[in-house]
Image: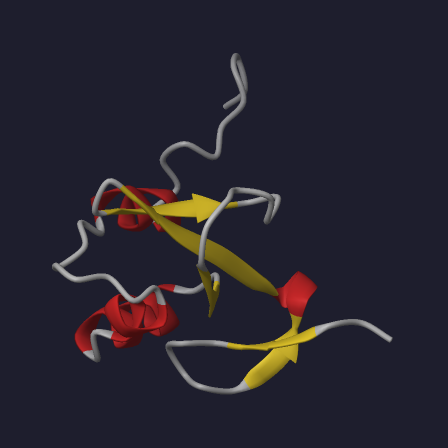
Length: 90
């Protein structure tokens, strides 16, 4: 049986493989592609709609129990396609 997690954006349940784990490192949201980074994680669908909804509702701050606002630029860049390319690929 596959583990189920809840998306902090749309608040629907989905298999763990369908969601992206996000962790906070030095007040910055960092996508955890392989779900192995240490610390508390939040799960979200890998879509701009769910991420935007989670940011608007401050769901990442609550889920990660952060005491200050989190920088979302790294996560937003990943969703826009930056950083997905492997060296030399187009």
